[in-house]
Structures are given as C-alpha cells and as structure tokens.
Image (cartoon, rainbow, N blue to C red; front, side, top):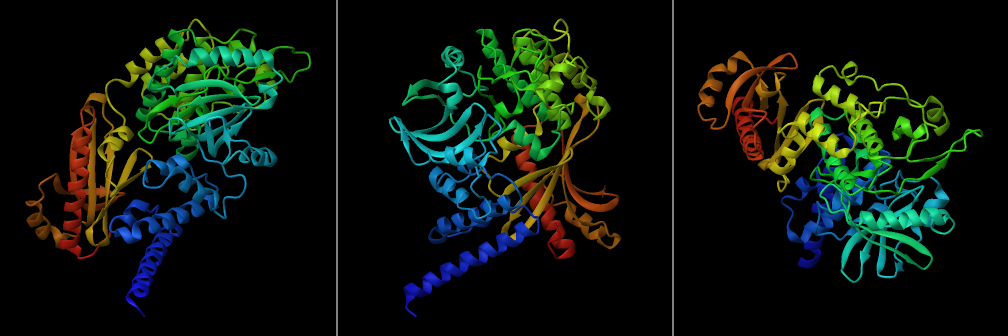
Length: 527
C-alpha cells in the first residue's frame, strides 16, 4: 500500500472512531458537545469530521422529534457556510419534508402541501434576494433566510400569504403604513426592519436576520425558567415595546413566538403591527378580533381597540408563562375566550412557585390586571416596573454566556435552580462543576461554585488535608451532596456582585483542582 492510500485510510479510521464515540455518547444521553470532539483534530481531519458529527447530531435530534435550527449552529461553526449547514439539516433521513429551520416569528405551519409549496422557493431568486432556506411559516405567510445579492449579507424575508397580499386591500394599507413606521424603530431589543416592498405580485418585508430561537421554543425546551432569567427577558421585551410606544406604534400581537432569544441571551421583539385579523366564531357576534386569542387583553374581547396597555397585558402573560412554563388557562378557541371575556384574574404565581419573591408576584399581577386603571398604561411604565423588580443583579445565564463565550471546553445544563458545567480536561478526563445560589435575602445571597472529588472516606482524611494546602482557588471541604458526604473543592461569591470573570476563573481552577484531588485520592476519573 502506497503512503498516500495509507494516510487516507488512517484519516478515515480516525474520523470513524471519533464519530463512533460521539454516537455512543448521544445514545447514552450524555449530551456530547461537537466542539469537544474537534479540539485536537488536525487540519486534514477537522472539516470532514465537523460535517460528520453535525450530521449525527442532527439525525439524533430529528429522531427525538426536535427541530434542529440553522441558527443553533451558524454562530458555533463560522467555517461552515449557512448553505452547508442547511444542506446537512435538510438531508437528515429522520427530518422528512416538513423540516423547517426554527426561526419563525409565527408558529410553523403543519400543513404538508403548504410546506412543500413554501420550500419550492429555496434556491430561487426574487429581485435581489436569493432564497437559502425556510425559517418558518404561519398564518401571515413565510419567513425565509435569504442572501441580499447587492450587500452580500444574509437577512430574513417575510413573504405575505396571498390571501392578504392580493385580496385584502385594507390589510395591505395597514401593512404598508405600519411597516414604514416600524422601519424607524432602531433598538437592541427589536428585530430591525430594513425594507418593505412589492415585486412580482409579492408583498414582502426585509428584516434583520437574528440567530437564535423563539421564546416559545425556549419555554417548550426548558419549561419554567429561573426567576432572574425570566425577569431579564421580560425586561428586554418591555424595553423594546417601550421604544415603539414612545413613537405611537402598538405591537398588537405580543407573544413568545414573536420574541427571538439570541445565543447571547438577548431578547428581540419582531412583527410589529402585523397581527392577524379574525372573525368571532359566534354567528351573533360581528366583531373582528386582532391578535392571538390566548394573549389578548380583556378589553379587546369587549370591543375596545388595541392599545399600549393591551401590549402590556400580553407581556405580563409572557412573564407568567416563563415563570410557570404554561399559560394560566386551558381555553384555546376564540369563541371560548370571547364568551369568557377574560374577566378572571391570573392565578398568583406564588401558589405554583412559592419560592418566588412577593415582588415578582405583584409585578405579574399588575401587568395582567383586568382593569385598565390598575395596569401600567404602556410599556414605558411596565419597563420601569420590571427594572425595579429585577434590580442590578444579572441573571446566571447572561453571566455564563459572557464568561465562556469563547471557551469550547465548557458546556452547561440547568437542573432546577442548580447549574452543572462540564469541563473537558487533557487525557480525555472531565470534571463537573456545580453552581447554585443560597436561599437568603437578596442582598445576602451567596453564589456557590463547587465540584465533587469523591466519597468522603475517613481513610482519605489525612491525604486530603495534605492536598488542601496546594488548592490555590477555593478550598477542599466535606459537603453533603444528595445526602452523602463528599470531598468538594468549593468557592463562594456574593450573588449580587459576582462578575463573569470571577465565575470563569473559579470554574476553570476548581475543575482542575477537583480532578487532581480525585486522581490523587482514588486514581480514577469518576466525575
């Protein structure tokens, strides 16, 4: 065998072995991170291995009835083009013809024929826009990822459904008027609107392309969110809405599906003024309703026009849903909700999550007050209320994002109110670091950062004490973990003032020292 064929065979074997290891980790439910399997890959192997690993993860996620999102991978693997990533997603045998990239501001459509029709634009061109992939579909139309040929940048293009774009002249007039107004909105918590146009009998909006997932998808994935994270996201939504309310723009359809959360944890509101009009299902009721029924304020069912206060009510429901994981009622049809009139008060969140603060419960109550006189009049007032409740304390997720933005050796998961961070170490070793906040008054809370080494076996005490003096960051201690005494390397910071750099340094150092203690005392890699 010549050297060239031998090298090629060695590369194939290296890729196969790494892929087999990755697939075993997937099937064992270990949530392996692709970056960790690429850490020591030579240039000859890197790109091919990346594509293989990405394909395996996408196949697995599709088989688990998840929706792999182009935006999940675009920011992680900039050396792959969006077209390459999308091709891998769409070629997954488990994906099927209904696969759509998860970016939409509307709930993705489930009608097979509609999806097939929407996908026919992929690869084609409209004016200066080249269609790359379908991002989402809903009642208003479809949203595509497109390449702007003149500027050579990606953007999101919303194509209005023909029933609105051709036949409904009143809607088109409103669409154009509000689109022009929304284009003037420039705010970090608003999806930017670049252009509004009509070409080849097609009405469209050119919007900023925002990588990330919708707040609706985030809630579906994680359930109820930690209070600080829910408040921070709600505050960002309120800030975006406040910018619109200041210049007289009402959103009309505030809901989690219309909020994008970026990989950096920034919330951006999209689809201003484009809510769908609906007729009541009651034959005796001739009123038109505008919005999504489950998020419509009580006064809208009573015939009043949409207002900044009705946006605030929907914002309050979004906050409730983030805190609890679901809406406060089971009704789903417009008829049920209209007849009910939504006159009931929202359940107190403390009855469902008693660990929440009374200030948070009062905030939800005010935002969702059925009486207009008791509810904040607009998002400007709602933003002030939310900022007051949130205070200056940053949520854990945003601290993690800043601390580990460029570190591919760290992955994290949330288990209730505790986070577990896994750090990959040399020699195929790994160490899990836990982060949790103590249950004290706000200004007295402590952020604990610790990693377990091994069982606190009395025969290890002397050796552990001798090892403790070389632990430069944190200290070696004994702590009950799930009712069992364990040796841990631990550090602590005031929760209200901890900085991302302090978290980063502690996690990296504690992982190394805990692994060294574990190896010194037991000789194995248990965590």
